[in-house]
Image (cartoon, rainbow, N blue to C red; front, side, top):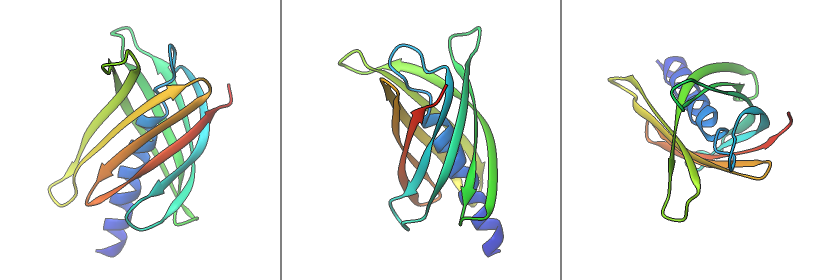
Length: 134
């Protein structure tokens, strides 16, 4: 049971991180590297994202990383772009995780070569911080 919850939380973190790495100013396309950090538990780990544009104006993101230092995760998610009241592009994603875990939600913004965002999943919340490497 605990391992299932841990894997579901790491999947949620991955989704969040994937989504967060797609909000770069005018063009979030590229490869990103950084970390995710839980605000609830303090857990954290490395994360990478590869974000590519789709024909419909959204982005396909693939996130990879580690949870608890040794548990790998990989996740694909569609990032939906929108704009806030200041004209900043915000990338958002939401994904159901099942009846016990609820939904994963993330929101991120890219400024220059940095991607920063927040996530919520299964009673957890946290941040992602990444830098563009390509």
